[in-house]
Length: 140
Image 1 (tube, one colour):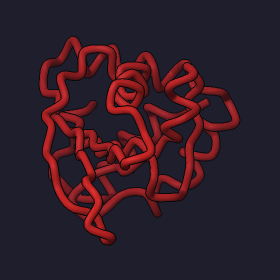
Image 2: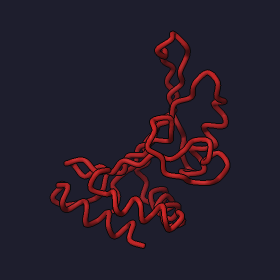
Image 3: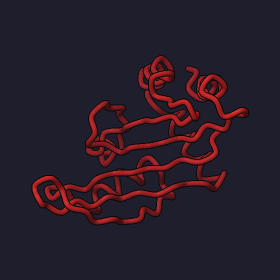
Image 4: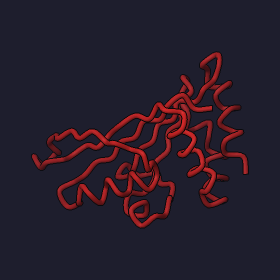
């Protein structure tokens, strides 16, 4: 159902890197984030934590997390699938970092979040085909 998943989170100067990692682990327990240090708009240090999951077992564990989402969150994702997917069948989700750190997975629209990109397994790799697969994942 999913070929792979990529994740990314930004750690700003006012945040704890360890707490952002914990937020990532809430969503992806097997994550082993790579660390990239860059400079922000105001010349402040920004850390980017990112990684990619390709192992079937870890993807299956992530799918279980998605299934355990609040029914209203799953319903929201289901309704917005077309807008959250690109033409190549990549599905984009964002979860609140602070809430994830507390163990609560809340979908958000803002950029200061845990960014998740799911490559939906669809043949041929077109949006229409991937949408049907994604609908099965998020059907409530």
